[in-house]
Length: 78
Image (cartoon, rainbow, N blue to C red; front, side):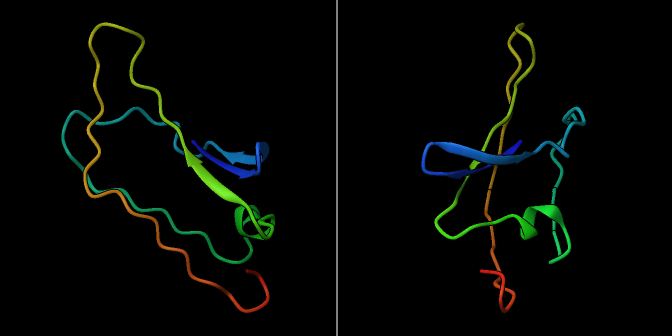
């Protein structure tokens, strides 16, 4: 889940990634264009929080390697 925050206030969240993680490593990439509600609702001074849930007990783990976020400004948006 991606939360878009302004200070301590949550502006909105994206929960598009509701699928169960695979048992093998895979590369995941998400991209949003200027018409996506995520981009349209960004405000100056906001920050992002990435959240995840690992199982419901029983020793589950989630391994994340080489995590990165790239933000590209579209003129007039950021």
